[in-house]
Length: 65
Image (cartoon, rainbow, N blue to C red; front, top):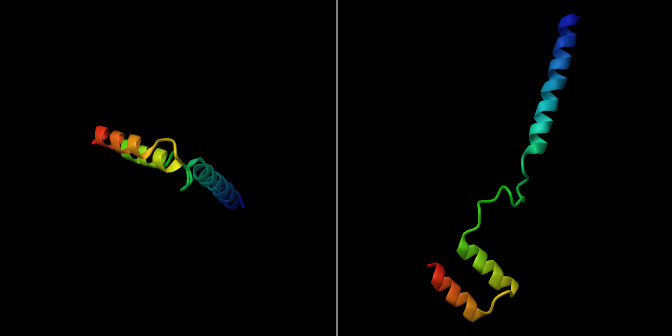
């Protein structure tokens, strides 16, 4: 009986640890999990959002290459 109780609580604790570890990991869509963006990727994003003009985009692209 004592062995069964120890086994039960061991499984409960193990499941709790797994749950906490799973919740602590960043999700697949999380920006934190992503590889840091390069300067060129950031530049493309800014151009796509309309923050900079085509001329500015081309000039900055030349500057970072």
